[in-house]
Length: 446
Image 1: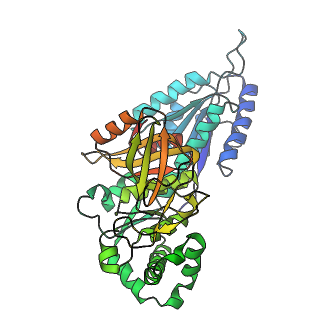
Image 2: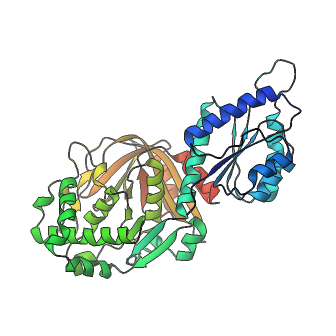
Image 3: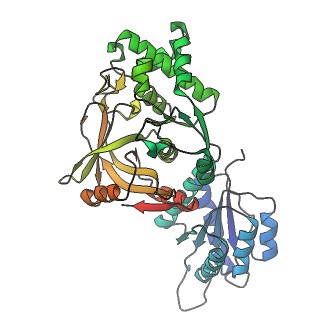
C-alpha cells in the first residue's frame, strides 16, 4: 500500500502583491508540516497553469490542500480536479492589510472561482477554511482534515473479520463484503467461531504461557476465576490473538452468546476486552459496523474505545449510561479498581470484565449506522464521561451530553438507530464529520 500523502497547491497570478504572498506561502508550509512532516510542497508559488501542471505530474495524494495564495480564476482549480482525485481542503487567506490602498492577495474571490469549479465537477463535500496560519480555527481545521484523510487512507488497507454470525434479532450488526468495500474501502473476512474454539481446545498449557502472563498482568482477580474456565479463557484468547496476528486483522466482530456458554463453556467477553487492550478493535454480538466504528475511533483518539448499549437515562443529570456484559479494554478501567474480573451477569460463568470506566472531560459518542434504505450515516455527539462507579454488573460508563438527553434518546429510537454505540476518549467530532463528508456519508450531530 502506498504511503499517506498530503499535497499543498498554492495557486495564484503574478499581478498581485507577491511579497505578501511569499510570506503567506512560507508560513503555510511551516504550519502544514507541523501536522504532516512529509507533505509534498512546491519550491515556489504556482503562478501559472504551466507551473501547476508541472508540479502535479506523477502525484497521487490522499488530501489536497488547495490555497489561493492570490486570486486565481477557475481554470486553476479545474486543472487540479481533472488531474488529482483526492479530497480537497480549500484554504482562503485573509487580506494581510486593509488600509484603503492596494488589494494585495484577493484570495477570497479566487476561492469563489475554485468553489464554482468544484461544485460543477465533484459530488462530494468541499472542505473549506478561511484565515491566516495564526488563526486557531485554521489550525484545528487543518489538523482535522489531515486526520480524516489519514483514516480514510488507512481504511483501504483495513481488514475486519466477522467471527461467527449475529444472533437472531441482532441483524443490525450484519455486513456484506461489497458494502464494506464500496463505502469504506475495508476488506471483510469471515470465519466460523467453532474454528477458533476448536483451535483453543487443542492448545496445551505450555502453549499458552505468554498469554497466561499477559492476562494475569492486566486483569485484576483473574486468579479467582474457576481454574478450568480461566485456562479455557486463556486458550481462547490465544486462538483469537493468533488468528488476528497471522491474518493481519485490524478489527473483529465476534459472535458471543449463546455458543460460548453452551458449546465452549467459557465466555468470549474477556477475550474481546484483552484484544481491545491490545488495540484490536473488538465488538461483541458480531456487530461489524460497531467494530468499524471502534476502529475509526481508535485511530483518531489513539487509544481503545468502548462499545456499549444505552441502558439508562438521567434527565436531571442530562446523562446516558452505556453498559455491556464485560468486554471493555483493561486500560479504560477506573484507577481505584483496575480491570476487575467477574462472571457474566446472566450466565454466571467467567471470566468477564467487571468495572466502571475511568472519567474523561472530553469524549465523543459515535456510531456508523444504516438507514432502512441501506444508506450509511454517522451519529456524532460530544460529551463528558463522569467519575461514576460501576452502574450494573459488567462494564459501564455515564456520559453527560450537551443537548437535552431526553430529546436525543427519543430521536435516536424514532429514527431507528442501532442499539450499540461507541464512546471515544477524546473530542474528535470535527475529523469524524470531515471523514463522513470525504466518504459522502450523511451526518447526524447532537
